[in-house]
Length: 105
Image (cartoon, rainbow, N blue to C red; front, side, top):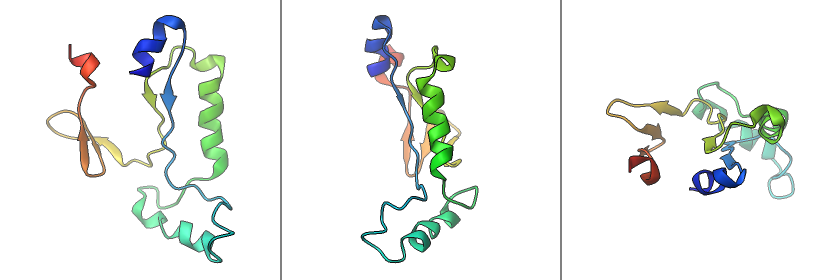
């Protein structure tokens, strides 16, 4: 909705759903934070969690003039878990997403 409303004003709205990223965020909470984050790797199609630099590259691209025509986009760091499914829509974990209401008009 933000992309549709902001577009005529020159405002772009994009989302990066980064997933599990290996950072030191949990170090003060868990002594095994790196091992804990790595335990999510088997649930990812690539068999690993993301590195901060990988997400930063996407964010820098979206903030740059090179992405001037991109809006209403969900960033591609879903690790392959967002894939097309028969019957339309997109499978996101246990939830099937259809076209936004504004596009269905």
